[in-house]
Length: 297
Image 1: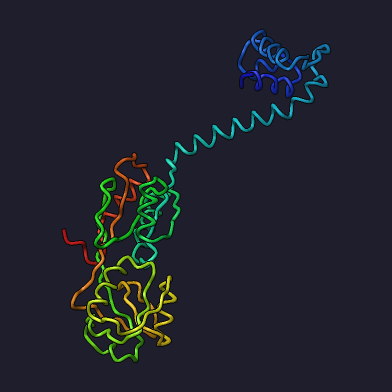
Image 2: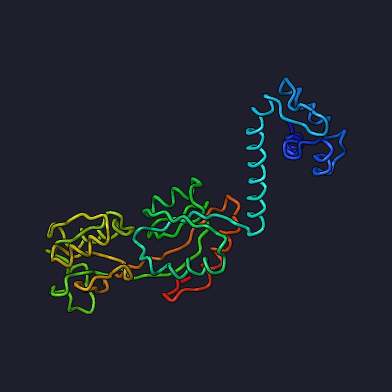
């Protein structure tokens, strides 16, 4: 069965006349008649009953008509959707964004994409830096934005630096360390620390703590930055957080010193897969610059 046979059949249903149906389909009547006969042969019986100038559906024709009508409509819908896709160059892009990045740092980038490349549909995936890198390498993401300090980037990934951000010690506003210009790791002796389980610099920070604090002090665990800030505000501990993720009226943030800790956030893509038009546009927008300190290179 071919689509032109279905269209000829439906034209005869509509016109109730082979001559008029052939004219509607822009084919000769013998060509239309042959196509209907082939269709009847495939279905195993007559589809039309000719009576003078008109043709009427047989019982078999009545049975198959709704099915063939549906096939024709679905075919037309597929063609329409394909033409719409081609005309607006619609594409989709699945982006992983590290869960510890403050949303406002990337909202401008996403806004530019929507304004200039509105045909691109986004899906944003939240995750830790390690999770996002694994998903990107496996092909589950088109791009990912994250930082992995002290980790050598996978050779299969391309990297576009976006911004650099200092790590801060966050305390309650009335904490005795809140008046310092900066806070050293040694100053944290005896303090209750809230360790963020999804922090990309947790291992580096805990090593510094072991070197400078020894066994003094106690720790809490927390997976979410908003909860971490809420715990700090209630005086339940202090924590290390990235500079632009600290939004709470009851906390104070001071730079970590001796040593300073920074994170460099980059856009990562796969070198092994072809970049879609949407991904190329996203990379172009990402390289336009940032209001934050650029990555030294």
